[in-house]
Image 1: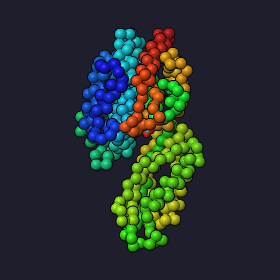
Image 2 (image 1 turned 60 degrees about the horizontal axis):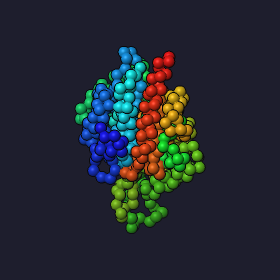
Image 3 (image 1 turned 45 degrees about the vertical axis):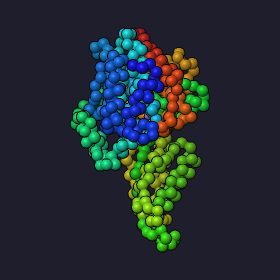
Length: 406
Ligand code: HGY
Ligand code: MN
Ligand code: MN
């Protein structure tokens, strides 16, 4: 395997739909091609490789009989026109760390998990793989559809999986030391503080709503302003109101990232819109309270403009603190490799958000150039990724030494 991490990530970035950056959605041809590459990485590191019923590719280094397992991983998928590092770097780095330890005895098994769908871009849900391992997956979510009407279940079956076996993935009764995820920071903090890596303290909670407004289409030239029921103008007022609320609240952030307009023609008053509303916070109560306040504001704006409003919460996951003991072990490994290491919260959510329901969870961040992510020019430096790789190898050795002591 090439020894430059950047080259390996460059290679797998080619498994993408056409267009700028990386577009690799779950259960697609690009995903299939990426699994071939990840399987090669895993086999080169001496791991046994299998694909589970949820589409998670698992590379396992066996341990002594009855020994617990230490889990690493992240996601193979990307957003549309995303970067080369988000997710997939956290699959590659632990594989390389295990390659470094290939000839050392370990008192436990180790697995690297390449989850199929963390972004929730193709389907209106996410984290099916880790939630299945944590026994937290509602099987009904497999009937959710993508924008072409394909359900997750159909996409999985078409991918060669057996979604009917997903319930058997529950690992709550198995011995797990913990789950450690390595991820590009996706923010500017480590660059600002001049550190190659950082330790995550907690992962934000998130909820997503689908909001529709129905007004009245009409000729843009003949309907006087005071007689209009313009759904897009109503949405615009709502979006600005949310921005002002979140900016002043301080403990939540909120975004409308997607909106569709009907009939979406230059000379027709928009009669209908459908938009997303996403709210995030490290504090679940603050997030829920914010959602209630925002919906009250939306109702008032819709009533004032004589628009009919409907809103449905389509996704939610709670905030997750990182496990203190595992975080401390990761911090001491990081300090051996890189000196004092900053601690910071994650505003982005991760597979680790769901894995925290299964076992102790910790996260290692890698510096992100200018905090740019979910963009084609997302970038992490080779040297920083090598520091993270060495930190993971150190952590495994330290946990092995702990094991021998107990
Ligand atoms: O949206 C997120 O926080 C993650 O990148 N999926
Ligand atoms: Mn990610
Ligand atoms: Mn992402």
